[in-house]
Image (cartoon, rainbow, N blue to C red; front, side):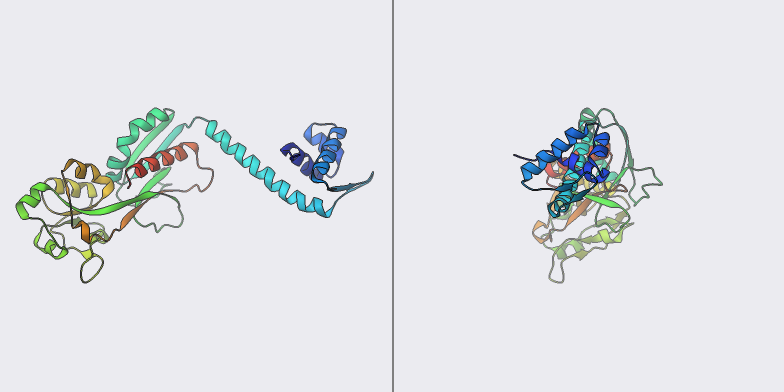
Length: 298
């Protein structure tokens, strides 16, 4: 016969309380019921766990071994019950999300209607910032960050990663021609970032290396501004797939030099201060948005 959780609880309670009568009082049972449960457990295990006399109780060698594992099992069962209880609750409350404007516009906003239909009791507050923010100072529950993480004081959850591609509009290419090799880029108008020079290192293989540092003729601090400039036919740009996949699908932007792309993918993380027992509203949002990103193979 298999051991039951109630029998483990009785056994541990007897050990913790020091006597059957004290354990019975704690458990709300009679001493005889506790004694019968303990005897039944020992019968199932085929061994004596506690040497009992009228004056004292001592754990046997088998009892000392068994109590350690019994405590672990009971703790795991308690944690599982708590998690199931959380899942039965209705996620509610204010959820403050911060992300760079391009990610907010292209990877979060399109799914907000569906998320609100699933979790109507969650009150969303969507804030955008292209720079790294202080989560506590900005009263932010979770921030989405693109690229490598450097802040070890924050806990992070990976949401996936996004390819980086070289792009231009058909209008621009019609006027200026299509670059067929990396060195051809020197003859074109390149759109780059003004605030983060590292983003002007494009993931392109060439005879002298695995990446290509550009000298942009037109710069902007926001990826969304660069996207709009590229759509307007102002030059060639390097942007993440999460913000351009619809443009590519619709033919508004065309992928260039794909055979030279080194395959680098920008990591996407959700960062927060709580490491365990995340608020249910945060957990629901992270699960939801991660599934959406995975569906688009970001």
